[in-house]
Image (cartoon, rainbow, N blue to C red; front, side, top):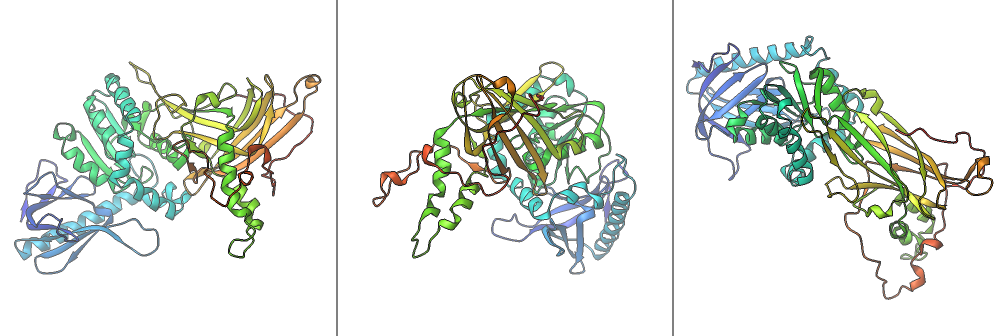
Length: 534
């Protein structure tokens, strides 16, 4: 029988004889009495009497209801569709006390679902296209998105980020020290994950927080928030992509952790900007507000030899009777196409860093599709330059206390570490010699970027005023496929049948340039004597 469930006309509830989750295993909680409640615009919630915190939420627009008996039904939520085949991510079985109540519930379900779908197909209050025309789906391939949301839907990966105390502590300080920006304000948490930032915002006195999360982590966030009822009563978890969902009101402030390796990896910055355009009031605040990518040339002979030595395997001429050397050049270049992610000693840097600034409050989504950064440095030492080192920081421009979160070398290490692009052919420089080049990054549909790096040493000494390039080296890397080098490895140990000369020394490595991405020595007039710094 229909029961009153509150003062809102949009709420409708039914008593249930039993509720049990699918699939049923030894670890699944036993069936329990409970209730079903239609809430808000498109939510169906099942509450268990034995544990009110264990509520199960469904989005009506992606939920199917099947009648399997006079008083028995199954409610299923559609999973992520990587193909044309429909799959279901979870479900529950429900039992009513009487057949009339079962029929009434099914009628209410169909009516509410039609309303929810119709509302999604009409013009949204936030002035955007409906979910069926998602920008995210247009620019990101389905297999990449599936892996991405699966990864962030697991608690172990959320724990990895939560245990980055530099990251989490800085966010907490930025929010709590700037209570004035949150008290009595509506907040949107973009990519809420476990919901920790939403809980921080509620601690700071937010009027209401909308925690938007597209992965299955949304269910864990609901459970965590429900377990903190004094804060949770002001937090609503919205499962879906910011490109697709709708919210009942605009936000005064937006909080998110959209940074990936090199700031831009995973392309979540674009979703952050889309959420800004859809949900943030004019001149609303964004935490973080600004991001900066820092770059400097580095010299690291040990790293260079380590990467080059990986290709030694392909120099074998009698590997079970097979000559592997035809693939050595390809393997050599392949290893140098991987950006190196690790924490390095800042003393490896050979020139002061330059920066490229991205203002999240004003940048356009399209500006993030392709990023071009001119490079210009003055070497402080005479050495071999092995590539470009990169890191980032972000600013939380609070009204009371501006806070920076940095991933710089020498600073406390974060789970982002730093990133280095290693040239397959180093370039030689003298103290005071000018180094120029270009860092060109192009977004691709696997939620990352292709990196094109060129570094050149300009003429130095007598006659340098005539200009020209003395030596140049370039490489192409895929930010999606880095080499995670979390600790400094020991020197390679030699096998019993391996002579010392078989291990390459840095001065002995021969460069096999196979295409236009390879390195080359060139002598040409300099068209641009300098590069604009960002």
